[in-house]
Length: 132
Image (cartoon, rainbow, N blue to C red; front, side):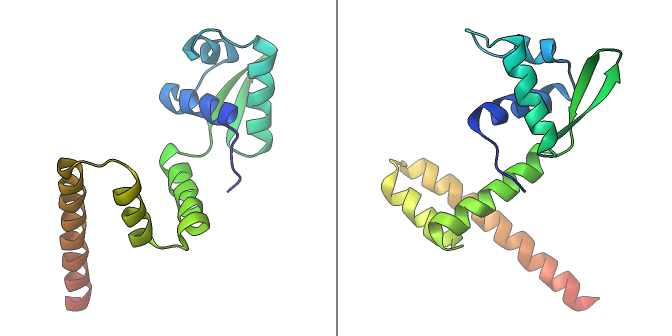
C-alpha cells in the first residue's frame, strides 16, 4: 500500500470520520486557517489516484468516500514502520519505546496487561486449532 503525505493523511482522517463527504464538508472539519477549496480538491484527487478514495458524481460536484479502512491503512503503515526501523521485531520496538520514552510504571503495566491478554487469546486459539 502506498504511503500518504501528512496533508493526505489529514484529509483521510476526516473522510474516515465522516464516512463520505464533499470537498466543502472536508474543509469544515479542518482546523483554522483552513486551506483553499482548490488545495483540498487537489489532495482528494491525489488520494483518488493513489487508490485511497473514490467518488460519486452529482453533476459537477463529487462526493468522496474511502476505499481503504483506517484499520487496514494503520496496520500496513505500522508493519512498514516496524520493518524499517526495528528489523520486524515487535520486541525491539517495545524495548525502544520503554527506554526512550518516559513511560511511567502504570503505562508499562497497562502494556503488560494488554500483552498478557493477547497471549492468553492466542494460546486458546492454538488449543482450539489442535483439537479440531
